[in-house]
Image (tube, rainbow, N blue to C red; front, top):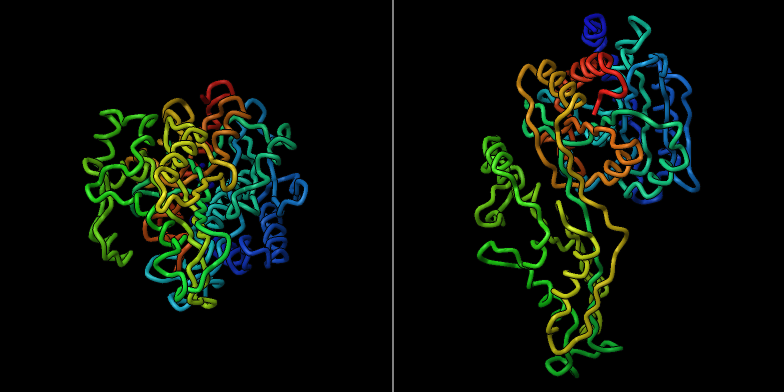
Length: 464
């Protein structure tokens, strides 16, 4: 292990160059216009896997999926097998004018590495491969077995991932899962995520007529579908902080006293967050809950899109139809089907002017996930992070969703899932000036080297 750590230190610049090669390819999966680039990134990841010392490397697909890169090293008999997950696709470049450097060129600035994908999630690819190479380039061995999968369509909902798991279940079967696609609570504070919110998305459609009507002829007499839709959506606002859809709380698992105390000890820089976001309104936090409690363990309903007529094609008409997409983040112990029913009842009750309001599912739901962060695998991870970051790690939740974690853990017979942070609040994933804190990048790789060593001291039947 010490030789591996020394190798990491001496070869840091080479690892950063490898990350630079990855982010230089605009592997955007959201628009369907960058398929050649996604293929190039998958092939580059495969080449980097081979260089790091993984074997049986291949670029795989299931059906019409985007490409996955896969590699493994299985020459540690009697030791646990660790499944490493990351993704090589990225979000598009939005708000181009706000980028301070080329989004496709890794740029060092103020202790951070800037580029699209640097944090989400090509940094994790480089971190995993750095830790693997550190062992393979020194002792030629790893303390445990490793299987590594890098997906190409995470940013479009991993729509083929569960099928991939099913098709390749024997090939990928492992004892421990490690994912580095979550956040550290602050720079320098190692964080392990043990809960994720899920998603139930719905389309809310309002109809008041079959055809539009000239607003001079019908305005004031004919009901406006856009106004009706916004009246329905406006019910989501609650000025006193109480949940707008009270029925959503019927199944919510309460925070334990231990969790509440732990969350309230965590640092939270509200003023800095307001500044960084340019927030001009007050926080919408529910009375009696902190920002962490709100975003990690309370449901949230968000209007993510509205459509009635385009501004470019606007005409003086009373609109007959209007549509919105509503996304509800769900938490333990909410049932996705029941949540959809609750949203339907909420939006369709007493519609303005008696308008027709329909609420239908928009895509498959993503279930919430929560685990008990205890047991040998978690102890191995916490010890590795404690030494790698030189401070005690913290257990946190995440307001986002990683839908495959629960199903994959179940597929592996309840394998522990270790979600180790790589981003931080300043990483701006999905936003302009995405970046990776270089110091935490180094500390994460050191932690992964130590995690492999700690897991190598266990046996497959002693990791849970």
